[in-house]
Length: 422
Image (cartoon, rainbow, N blue to C red; front, top):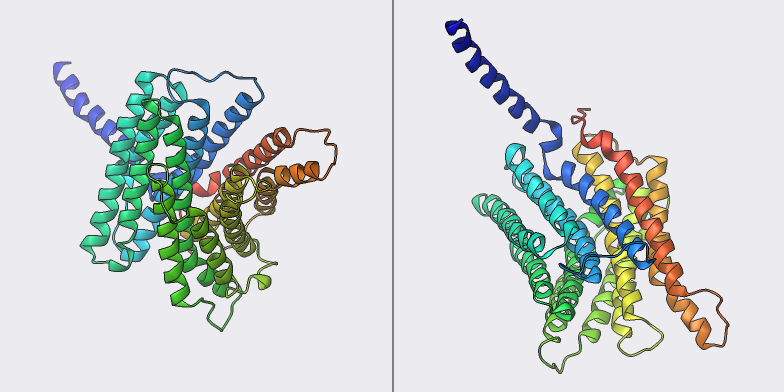
């Protein structure tokens, strides 16, 4: 009996180790896009649902941690948008360099850390927020070091520019949490809005690369679809200047108005998209959704700048036109395509995803445009029987949540299934 027990223990340990290894070698942990493209939209849908409950007075948010408004913008801008951007970059870097990106145990650990942050901010008391800040710092350090190590070791200089972008994103994330932790709510909101402009810059850089390429490939065009290099360079310069001026305007008065730079950036985006043959994409959902999102980003930036000079155009509504129409629709379209492409599937979305694209567009119009139109009508003497903001918040939010849940349901089998070799 003594000898029998001695033989069994190593076998049990071996089985345990194999089991753990088997879990982390699962397809779900193959590349960052599989886990984060699925979980970030799902948690964002839950977060926005909770926010709608708060707005309707059905739920009281804890006052010990983040304020309700900062919690909402943090979870949508950083918990959702920035997370998707990071997952996209860490997935793409493997293609750019040919070197293995985050996977297996290490990816599972990064994902677990991200889930700890979400849970801590949902608990939202002083202790949990402190834990979230520490975990968020560690998360960004891992992401930045991992990405930098890959591109620098392969001397992939074309993509070095994402290193400072990731650093800025991480710094803004931590500044929002720390500012709110020490009761500087206005500063936290300002830094969150700065991050939205950074997302616009990121869309300009990545979109400027992939949208023309995807369009040319999707339309099977023999003629190259591109835009002037000088235009792209000017766009980056103006966008970076706009982010810098807007961010600094909170601390010091500046002669240069961020509004002028926002209008200029939006106009350059509009000019750029004119070269991309958008009118030819109407029959291809994976293309027209990208073009439409880029167009809404352009209009949103212009309206954001105009809001400084007009009482009719609301800064908040223009900002939501960017976040819902420009950022969220772009994300929904991009992750739908990337998930298909990286799993070896045909680049044709299912009918429900087409509906999700339309719903996200409708959410952008309802949330970002509808209130401005109704308020304009009220200024012209029309008697409104509804509160435009109440309709925009609830209907726009519901459409957003449904669009993301449709994506999660449709793509769950794809994310957990092995790559298809055709």
